[in-house]
Length: 419
Image 1 (cartoon, rainbow, N blue to C red):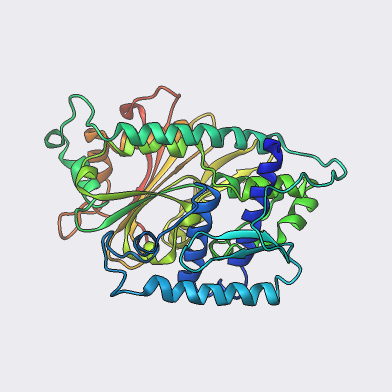
Image 2: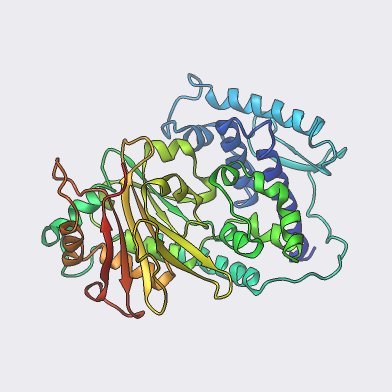
């Protein structure tokens, strides 16, 4: 069996999972949807052959790692309901599906099989060739970048945090104050990496993707139609979009974040945008990395911010626009990074948004946030807060050149967000 055929089999299973997750039987139940996606990802991404109840309770339902499964049956109850919803899907909307997904009792690892077959399926054979369609070079570039991301992320996480030489927290009180709003000992902080595949999907098809459609996966139902309208091969686009891929710039920022003050004392968790939820958005602190297209979780905060990012299809580049000011366009050759600190959706914590014209600008923005003089200048341009915490803000930083230091960056916009 060739490697290509194995990939085709995995893609077919993943597309099936996404169709089920976006169906009416699951899209209105976040818990059931999260349960299906977690179990399926464990099988498709990690080749898990067995998944235990306690793992599911901890990972999906936020139970302690050592909770008593005999006294708490939340996983069994939801798994039973999920099995019924899967049966309903395959009896009605999914009646024409050639593959079946089942969750056996006693083991929560999903099993895929062909309809009317008893045994689990082997990797599918290669599909019948279709007429050649145009494939944008960025599709293949994204696939290559995904492999680089996987290796880089493992390296960054294994290295762990270490403070930069000669920059102790005591010497950076304003930097410490800022990051104390994001990394708190009593609240989880989710570092949400961008979904480069959906960003590319929007660029290639010209179709915007609202957060609601991203979260419930409903955009996947029109993916073949969108690909055909853009003269792209639907199977290739489906294969790329359904895989978990992030930009290299977003992954690279994880290393810089690991060196920020307070992270060692916080419960910081690396998350992928496609796996995030409204429940976490409301309850946790968060850091959102990427662009507004590649990280739709920035959308709920746009009404409080004046900065918008416009994509120029001709140049393939993003540029910031200030919708609250008369002089509102900022373009190359300079790079720009937007940094915003706001209350989370539940107003129980804070979120930090970092986006920019590219990886160099975002890296410069992160360096800016670790430099005492730069952060002090930012705070000086904001009204003082009543409780002496770092005030909420939105800022646009202009960066000149790839090797620019934080002192070379200039603050173009600095103001409080709308309440």
